[in-house]
Length: 466
Image (cartoon, rainbow, N blue to C red; front, side, top):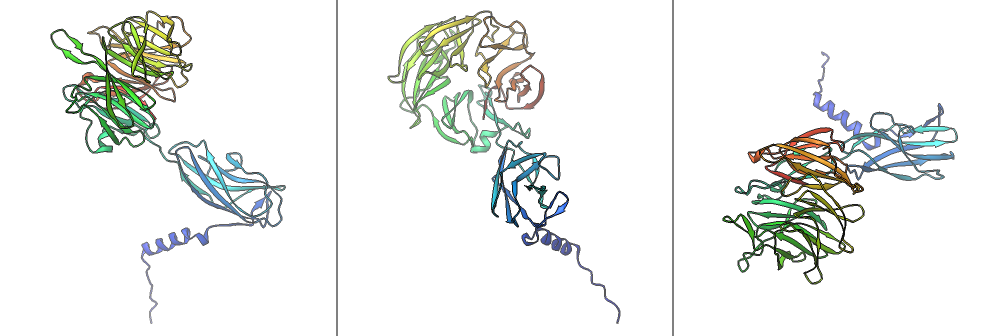
């Protein structure tokens, strides 16, 4: 009889090998750990890694038998580059041990979207040894932490939200549409974060869109009703305090006089997401901010800041500043800074409604000023635009302790339109590209060194960071 060669299909052999490698009972158990070059009878295993986040994870391990060894320290060691991590890499030091047990290490300070090598270790009075089992895990990329507010073209009502993930570099142009299944269908003027939601103010159509801060899903749309069609008319900005919010409304535009008429501030109930009142305004209201339990409104067509008392929805007082107050921010001392179209920067104490300082010769945009403050609350950045038809634009930085305007920009370019600064102190500047198509976001270091750039939607005018 001839010898018969039985050929085993390769995929069956591969399956058998994988099954053997993945069988938990065959996991290499450190039975006889080497410490100081000598083999011991300690039994130590590496467990699973779970609860993985962008910057942390939880790792398990287990001692099956100490065999009367004096355990001085134990835990996990991990590394990005070292396939066999040691106590010279990152580690969780869990102290001494006198009985066999399962243990857990909380790994913190990890980098997002990064692969780590990890194993258990034990230190006795003879030295340190490691488990033979070495696991790998990868931290998650995290959320898309930059939201670009794309104003859109007023006549097209094609405003949108783009997102950018600073870890992966991924850009999502239609983030709102993807989350909701329908477009914004409006021109987006501004957006603020408040109590777990984003509130975006739009005109064409006039509304306030309320989004869940994590998912960007729409939870409510606040808009005029048939019984009150003028409840919002060219709304611009929103400020919230308690369970209320206030929205500045330019009013109707008179094409003959080129003036916005019948301006007002709308009052919103954030529990029911309804418009509950209207405060008539003598001039066009522009920027708004909540501070010291009050709401401050920039009377852009005048030289005052109006202060709304939310207990009765009335203007309690006005603060005289330089002409054309516009965008407002809060610094680390909870002081309000107002940039004025007249080229002045004003600091206000919201506690007693007094002007504490005025810095002249500020180079401004001249309309819808763009001004932001860093995460430390001590450095202000603002946009300057050269008079038309020049395309020249500049970004200036000024300390909250300064007494004079800076003379040199930190960033110069063309067609700058929006401005933001991230919690990591990266400066974000947008180029609207003439509103002829999608815009561009350019990222810079705090000193003005360019990092990179990415595409966004049409007319990018600002940012939100999460």
